[in-house]
Length: 300
Image 1 (cartoon, helix red, strand yellow):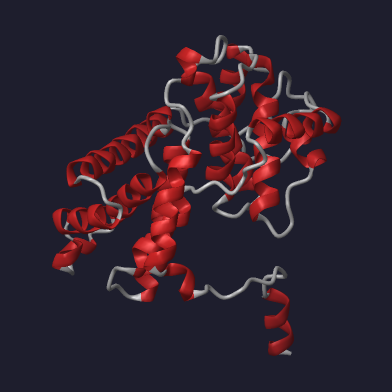
Image 2 (spheres, rainbow, N blue to C red; image 1 turned 180 degrees about the horizontal axis):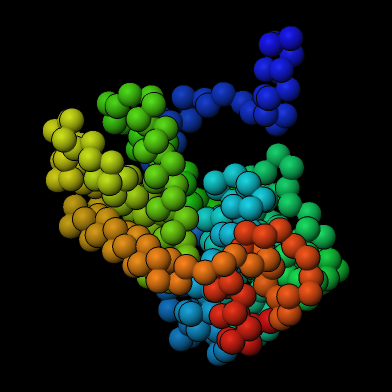
């Protein structure tokens, strides 16, 4: 009986074991060379976009993150979707009224790349309060694919985290906690425009250092001190230690400001849709902030 109950609690999605051969230096060096090919233009707000401003991107990114969290998407989905969004906006002027459609489309594509069971067009349309229809999303999908030249295998900060952690002499349980914290920082960075121009390896390394400092692991191992870890990872990613230290400080500052904003805007939760009215029933976990700000900005 106990065995039967245990079987019922096992995740129905079959996952392969991590292949340690994918964590060797040859793979890491290949990723470091490839990451430059997937960097969006850092100044597309000035040079390409006429209606969209950084604040609108922040609101869209927050909405996308909340959708991914509620749908329990793989950790890679959100950073990959944001990479698609930024690369598209770097080459194609987009009306602000189509920004939510673009965000939904990028999640649609990223989930196809990373999820065992990807998000459906119909489900994503529900999260837009049906302001977007499945047919529109599929048409937008083709446009995004063409503008990205069908190159969707982007290198994201998430891809580097396991490489960095494999080089640290820490317990497996501690490594799991570090990975979770670093993934959280990576997702947070993806919502902020200041990290658009940062190479994924830099964001990942900064997130790992910030996670180590936040967990106070430096007190147990001198090699995990801020200076030693920063110097070590900067050599791994072939970067200047000061640049990595600056990235880490940016991440910590972003975390502090996000926590302050959350504490100051604490309010009753409202439906998890980006909606003009509150007539459409939906899962009850999305913040009111994304909805009201999006309406104010005229993006829906």
